[in-house]
Image (tube, rainbow, N blue to C red; front, side, top):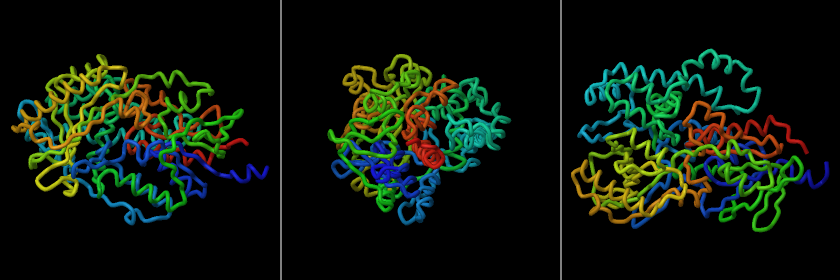
Length: 500
């Protein structure tokens, strides 16, 4: 081995300081590898960041925290005590629901109580709900070790005890009908069908297209639980950056990577500010489409994967509201009156329906300092199509007014007059700030039964020392799956032969 190669031993570049990039840096640094993270923004976290405005604090992106054990695990693999860095609580309720017919109810976190609430307010027998949650748990047990903790692109994944157990239970995944078809068969009240259909949006999909396998998602929220981090969602990012730095990871902010440099069948380093920096391996946390199109234009392009239809995006209004609403909780959903038409607009017409489902997150319910006294910080989101050149300015203006009208009607207050300050995030800004292709929040959509196999692998088949993490690759989008992508890459680096 040359002195140059010896000097590079283990040296790893991570492109992007999103949550998956930070988690990968932690896992590799905990194994003793020197790691440097390069981020184009001036701050870490990507979508999982925050900002302040006129005395209000807002989490900019993800607002629901599930599977906290995946965050705790990062501290434990580093030999640290999680509570020394990061604290959170289990929420007593998961969401408050508002329907156009005037129905309101609170979804409590405990399944038995949830089922009774649904029976009381919506008339759906409690045993239907409990049966659905048991089925959701079964789906999770079948898929967790087989699909979520391992690469789908390694033969070893399919030849082990967990795989055998998975094969024997594949019929339980219900992959050959849609989520809506399964839910409308199980539940008799359309409002309950709508409630459980909404979980398709947790990975940016359409319940009328995505397979019923996606009914795995309620298990995370109800059987495992929904949680709230002390300090807001950005505390996840901040605590993991602190952990990474304690392990010796170097972060370079406002430092976009220009190119991943390849030579033969290996990556040799990256180009930053027109300088070549040598590394023994590179992990890209950038959206896989932009990784190939912008950083690896000279490489073979996996067109079939890169051209897959994208997940939904989001239109978010951050509003400082100069009033408190005791009827609202941390998480709130105001349903549209016609869910199928809403999703048709989203995925077929590539626009936003005039009556969208509105989600409001209010962290000041748990962190009073996030808003001035007698005020609330509203994170107001509707699902939006990925950016394909729509007239966003006109669409935003119309949607804003539709949201204000809807909330004013259902809450009995003129919401527009209560907005003290405002900021906005739309698919164009998501695309530019986070390098997410078309502003899609979860990479490729999951609107067909083969979607899991149409995500890029966590490693390159062409370059032995190139890896991929984040929501655009296996196993998918959202905080838990991004953290699992980092775990998969950590395991791959340990077990994969990286030819020199």
